[in-house]
Length: 194
Image 1 (cartoon, rainbow, N blue to C red):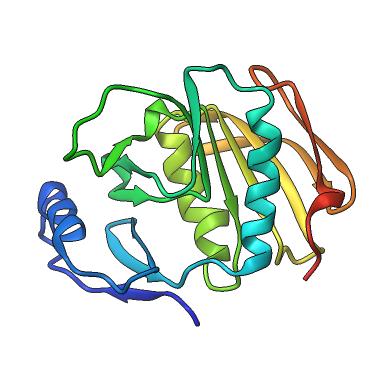
Image 2: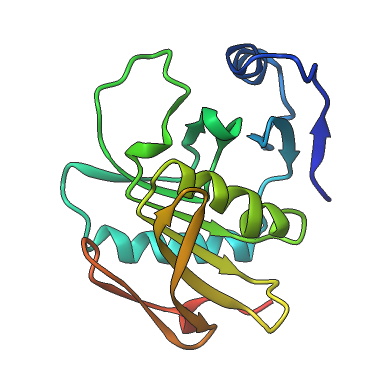
């Protein structure tokens, strides 16, 4: 199943777009994001996708401070890029919240992780990193199961404008090091092959 886009009035403001995203009844279990001003509805990630995210999450828990958390379904807002994005993993400090909170500002994130699916690979490679870099998120880890040269994990950092610099890359089976504040090696050999 592939992603579905929901059209909206292009003259609609950010607040109206977010209100529509929050109030609409979306298909249960789907992932609903606003990507470059377009509401995108994707099916729930597949088993292998979730296994990769879970293995990264398990490793991250061993190194993050007590006042940080790893979120799997947290929406992060990048209004300047008309984005309400839901990365596979968001590492961010825990903050005060209200019951009405549906998202956090993307700038609060220390690391975002995306694991590609066939239906969203373009967004994870192009649209989302541009939004994450614009928000100043220090690190972006892309686990690209569908990379043209074979499954690869790439760590991006040093955001400038809407562009990240590639810091390191590893084919599945090779280790990938995350720098401070994580100082962690991810063993991509633990990722299931498709």
